[in-house]
Image (cartoon, rainbow, N blue to C red; front, top):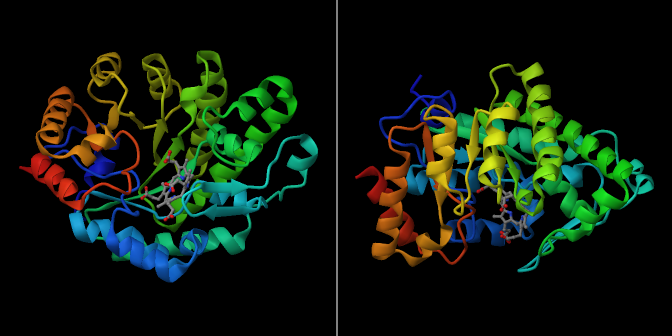
Length: 342
Ligand code: CP3
């Protein structure tokens, strides 16, 4: 079997050629994605129709030859499969029915709806079968904290105040919601591993609104519980945490205390300081500013060169510091790959 380099870096190897993938690499900046999206109608149909999910997952691999494919789905599939209503309005982002107290929490299903998640697992198995042998297949889920922010507010808000308030005003409810999401997420990730993913990423996109103590309590600890539950079933499971907006202390704690194999850095992270704190063998992923990819030209080359110099000799997976934006020119993605691969 050809070596899957992303997987190897997660085992602490320093790759001779840094592996590359991009968050949101299957998405609206690609005309072939927009074409499938138009056929599928709405976004959730795209997620739950294996034929479409398989196709859009493979598109960026065909076009750019990235070292990892990430399953096409969404983190909000978990609340949806627990019984929350979910819609995606064009240009407005997700809308969910809210869960704001113990009664509403207890009204959710005890199990993930198989008619939804089995379609995700089916897509995973087929994607693995069709990917080049050397391409790592990544599954993912949302972290309990980030899922809770959407479930409590019913949408994204500027600083996810509704969830932060709920954690203070009704700690019993909030802890029970997190417990439920820990369990559902572990089950979901185990299902993805059994279906064929090589590694998974846990997206904690709203970790940056938490104070240091709350970060430990609501980001690190729930992720640690997911990691232990997954490893109890899949001992070799490789797991990346992406706590967006985490401080240097937060990133270090996530790396050392959660049991994950790698940590994703957003573009604001002080990568040299984090690398210094963790040593060169803990896998770090990131962290090009997605706006540098929109700017292109000399600014993009310079940003890539600095980044690669900072990570030289480390167990590093190249990525953006957050998802690629829809307005990014494809020519700039090509420029990025040329710069990285020489
Ligand atoms: O990275 C990939 O290519 C895999 C697919 C993927 C999507 N969403 C597809 C998507 C992944 C890994 C996600 C994760 C996700 N979803 C996160 C965590 C990462 C992050 O961005 O912080 C979050 C917070 C969500 C929730 C979500 N889904 C939001 C807030 C939105 C609307 C914002 C937007 O970009 O439109 C989505 C929709 C969504 N998820 C799209 C895609 C390609 C756009 C939908 C479309 O095609 O219209």
